[in-house]
Length: 256
Image (tube, rainbow, N blue to C red; front, side, top):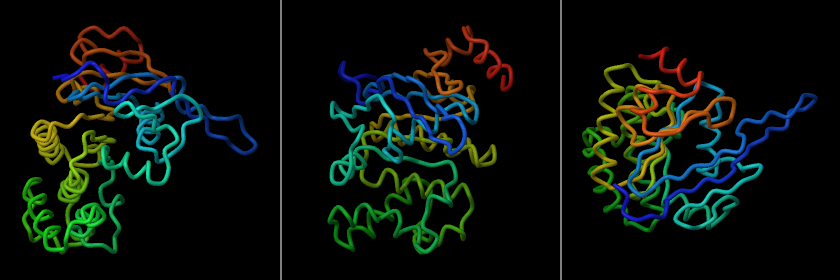
């Protein structure tokens, strides 16, 4: 699985403190450290409010870290801005929990999927062909190109969001509760799609999820977060079979 000894992503002592007017500061993420190796799928497990999405948003540079560092391919991206940030997003893309909210409602799905290709200098004709190919890759026909986000189902919209995320062939894919808003049948289809694409495109994956059973089936390794801290880490199967932390035991009991 790992093609070299250097991690693709290295997070060190990452902390995020939100200032609250008239109230004590809220420590959303508290001194979190982990590495993700080339080709690995790391699951971050925790309930709502555990800090896992805040970690993802700092790694993706949607919000700034209060302290700590984020290194991607050996480059410190903790404070990346401007052109440096564009370079980060060429290597790393995110699939969000609410697919329809992640699209511009005024843009056709095909236009949204092809936006990064247009920005990279690809000609209009080549973009159209590539978007059609990407739609096919995620199980959607070319008929979805001119549709708007509100004209498709949640599952179809998430497939389109995955097509958009992989359009520029990122080395790393962050999935933030990417299936939790979908019904069970559609969820399993999207998980199977993600698994296939990650394998075929040789992507590394950060998989944010509250469902430890899903992480067990999808991920190579996992960390468990509670109140902004990592309380357990290891292979998902080992964590499920022999949890060390009481919080992890509670998570397992709630789904298994």
